[in-house]
Length: 256
Ligand SMILES: [Zn+2]
Image 1: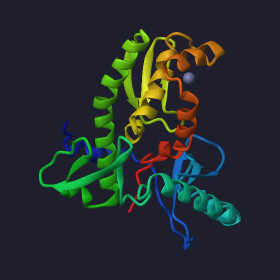
Image 2 (image 1 turned 135 degrees about the vertical axis):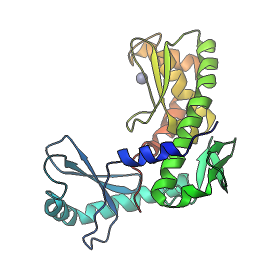
Image 3 (image 1 turned 90 degrees about the horizontal axis):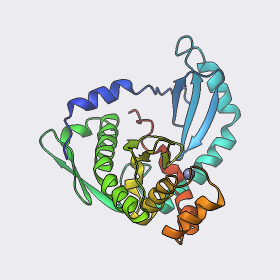
Image 4 (image 1 turned 180 degrees about the horizontal axis):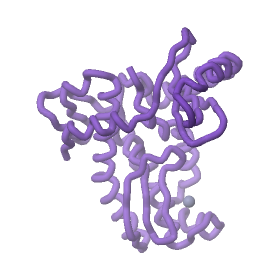
C-alpha cells in the first residue's frame, strides 16, 4: 500500500479550520459551516468553535472571544477531564507522540522517498511529511484511511460468511458520530478509526452492522441475533463507548 505525496496538498487545501489567538490562554479551532449560531464543543480534549459561514471570517471573532471567556471555567474542566480519560486509555495520542494500530502502539519511521507504507505495527512516512504538524497529521490520516480500506474488508467478509449474510457495497468513512452504518440497500460503511482499536472491538461493530442485514432496526430480535454471534457484546459495547473520543481524532487537521 502506498500513497503519493501529491494528494496531501489537496487534503491541506480543503481543510477549512482556522485558528485565532487573542491572547486567550487556550488552543482552539474554528470550524465554519452552514449554521446560524455559535457553539463551543469540547471533544478529544480539544476545543472547537462552530461558527456560521456567512460574511467574512472575522465577523464573529468578538462574539466568539466573549463566549469563550464566559465559558472558560466549563471549557477548562471539560478539557481536563477528557484529556485525563484519553491519556489513561491511549497515552500520547493527543500530542501525537504515540500512535496506535490494532489496539497497540505503532511506531512511525521516517524514511526518504515519497510513499507512506503501513506495516503491521509500523508506519513508514517520508521525512518531508514532518515539515509541519498539519502536513504530518494529514499524511497520518491518509495512511490510516488507506490502510483501513485494505484491512477492514477481509475482516468484514469473514464475519459476513459466518453470519450468513451479504452486503452490497463497502466503504471507509470519516464520520464523527458513529463507528459504522448499514443502509437498507446493504451498503456498509465503517469508520477508518476502527483500525486503531483491538480486533474484538472492531468485530463487534462489524457483527452489529451485518446483523442489520437481517433486522434493519434495534429491536430485541436484532440484539438477540447480535448476541448469537457475539455473546459478550454488552461488555464490548461498553468498552467501545469509552473510546468515543477517537471519532474526533484527526477530524480537524491541527494547524501549526
Ligand atoms: Zn445499529
